[in-house]
Length: 111
Length: 251
Image (cartoon, rainbow over all chains, first blue to last red):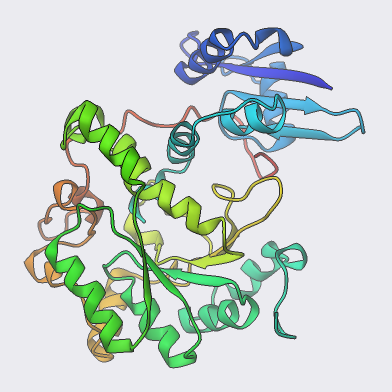
């Protein structure tokens, strides 16, 4: 298995807040070493490797993870909690997982 | 499962969206009810009551659930009971986990959302119970409409894979039969069919949620301005602005 983390650099040159948050969580959980590659989706550079990967996988938000599995398949994860549970087999709290769903699906506010 | 039902695995969402995008809410609802045995209608206690009325005219065999966050208006509770009696149906009421609510209130008080934002409270009181319910279903029906919020709902389809609540093991289908209807059409239906409605609508409320987080709006104000008005739009997802996407592979 090969894991790539894609972080976003905003058009002002700063790292996006969510990319920074997710990386900090990985560090605090001592999981950074499980990430094989870290690349950037740089909004200032349309040809950046990360933006190309986002386009290739139809991904609309950052950060995200691309997981190349032993069977040759590739899976993209935009939800950190899903990635933790399904790929790294780490537990996440129900509340953390739902907050992430809410953040990524603003229309859910109004159900 | 009846002979006509299908599983989510052989459900071609893109094809059905193309086929049903211009059909009436009743046609979309009929398809959903016919094809999915394990399906339920989500009822918020507001205008989505029209879905229950439409379903009741199609079949006696449909399920409805609603979430009691513990902070609803008395008028909403009255409507829940009114609907139960009027249509002679069971409305399954979902409740938040008591321990999670107790912990939130103990650490942050009863109105933390005014200071910390509404999402933490919504997660505990609304979305966690919703997710538990949806984990038991193959499909659900919502009253979401495009005209409710130009920012977050402008492109909602009449049928979609619910990527928020599907997981690696199961695919959840979400029907939005009212997606293309306007508020005016919904209210035309409510009046024409004499559908029971939430009395808060008579007081200027349009979008109705929990009592502390809902207020009436002025004429021609966007209806979502009646919810979480103290927050601004800073909590946007970190989306890509330069790339054009057209896929839903991500999980």
